[in-house]
Image 1 (cartoon, helix red, strand yellow):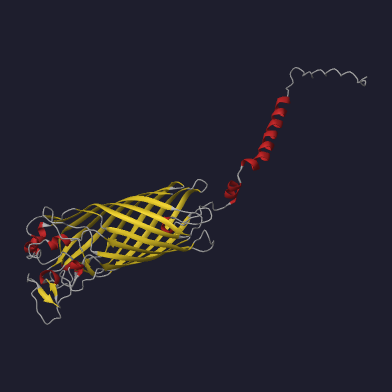
Image 2 (cartoon, rainbow, N blue to C red; image 1 turned 135 degrees about the horizontal axis):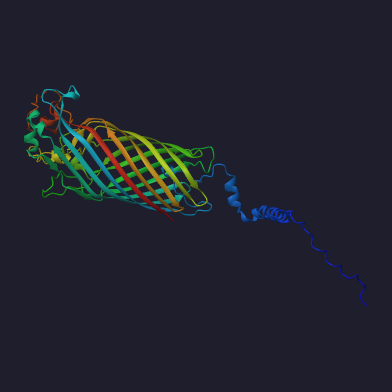
Length: 445
C-alpha cells in the first residue's frame, strides 16, 4: 500500500496591482535575462576562440613572419613548408630623355658654358619579364628571369638653330631634322642568380634580415648594330657583354616600419661582342664596358596587415644612387654615330663614355591579396650628371691633329676620329631624365 502523502496545496492567487501603481516585474526580468546572456558568452568564449587567434590577439605586433619583398627569400625543407615556388610576370615602360650638346670649336673643353645644344634624344623601352623563384633550402633561393623587349625606340630631334654654331654638324648627320633608329625587339639574354638569407629576423629575433645575392645577366640575343629606320639592316638587341652582379641587403621590421639598405656592384664580361669592344672595333682605345656600383636606402610602411589571412598593404619608398665608370658603350647617339655619312663605314656606333653619377627615388605600392597572390606597381624617377659621350683618349701629344679633320687617325693602334673626339668637337649628354613604370603580379605554389 503506497505511503500516504498530503494533498497538493492550491496555487497562490496572483498579486493584485493597485490601480494607479506601475508594475516593475518586466524590468526586473529583463535584467536577469541580460545577466544570463553575458554569463553565457563569457563561459563560451574560450570554446569559440581558437588557440591561434588567442595568440594573435595577445601579440602586440601582429606581423607576418616574413620580410618585405626587398629582402624576402623563398625557402624549402622547412618545418611546415617543404617547398616554395614563386612565378611572376612583370611589365615595364622606361622613358629616357636627354639633351645632346657639343663643344664649340673655340671652347677647348674648358667650361660647360661653351657647350651648344644640338637636339633632344628620346628612348622608349617596353618590356615584359617572366620569372621563377625556387626555394632550394632554408633561406636559399634560385632566381630565373627572362626579359622580352616588346619595343626599343630611339629618336633624336635636331635643333635648327644649332646648325650655324657648328659647321661640322651637317657633314656628320646631314640636313634632316630628326634621326630615328630602327626599332628593336627580342630577348637580350637570361638572368640567373642565387640569394641566401644569412640571418632572418623571424628565425632569430633581435637580428636583422641579411641577404647575399649573386646574379649573372647572360646575353644571348643578336649583338647591337647601328641601324637607321628604313635601312636594310639588323639592329640587334644585345649589348654583347654579360654582367656579374654581387650584392648585399639588410632590413629590420619594427611594428609598422621596415627600413632597409642595399649595395650592389656589376662587372661586365665581353662575350659575344668582341667586334664591338675589341681594340679595333670602334673609335676608342680602351675597349672595356663600364662597371657600376649602386647604393639603395629605403623604408617600407605597413599601414594594414592581417596575418591570419596573409594579407597586407605596403607603401615602399626608396632612394638610390649609382656610379658608372668610364667605358665603351652604346650612348644616346649610338645609331646616329654608327650610320653617319662621314663615320658609318668606320664606326660601330659605340664610343668612349665619361663616368657619371645617377640618383633617383622609387615609390612602390604592394598588395598581398591572399597567401599566395601579390601585386606590385611602382614609379621611379632618376637623373644623371652631364657626361661626355665621345672621349676616346687621343695620341701621346707627338702627333698634331686638326679638330676639324674628318679622317681617321691611328693612336696607339686604335681608330681615332679627331672631329668628334678632340676637345672642341666632343659630344655631351645633359639633363638625362629616366622615368620607369613597373607592374608585377606573383603567384606562389
